[in-house]
Image 1 (spheres, rainbow, N blue to C red):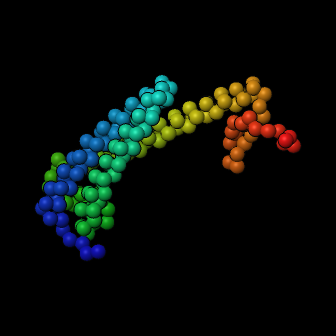
Image 2 (cartoon, rainbow, N blue to C red):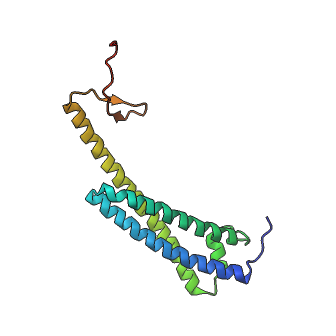
Image 3 (cartoon, helix red, strand yellow):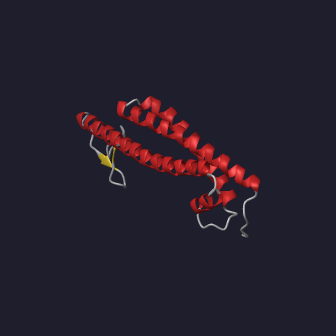
Length: 161
């Protein structure tokens, strides 16, 4: 693919995309804060709505990033960061917004990982409670191919008709 300098229209579009991406990431971080609060509270009903909203916001962010990447891909710079810094070297406001995008994306990654750990902890607690209930009901615990315990059904005993 031949590289060329972005057109003035491309430069303006990239700056707008960076602005939009920063705003969207800010809203995504607020959503991750809400998700963490819901996880700590244990409100599983609210998690479904948050998960749907998270997926939609992620798709919006991906579209912005893809379009920015497509426009920056025409430049001779090896990375998006290098291209943005070269193209907007004389526009400190755009560079500040770009730094904000990078920082917010890093924060979103870290917050999402933390929320994932909270979800795993909650799942482990639910699994432990289920194991106790099954044990109390005098059902033997079964394990799947991954070594995870799973509830038993009310099926037949081997050898019975």
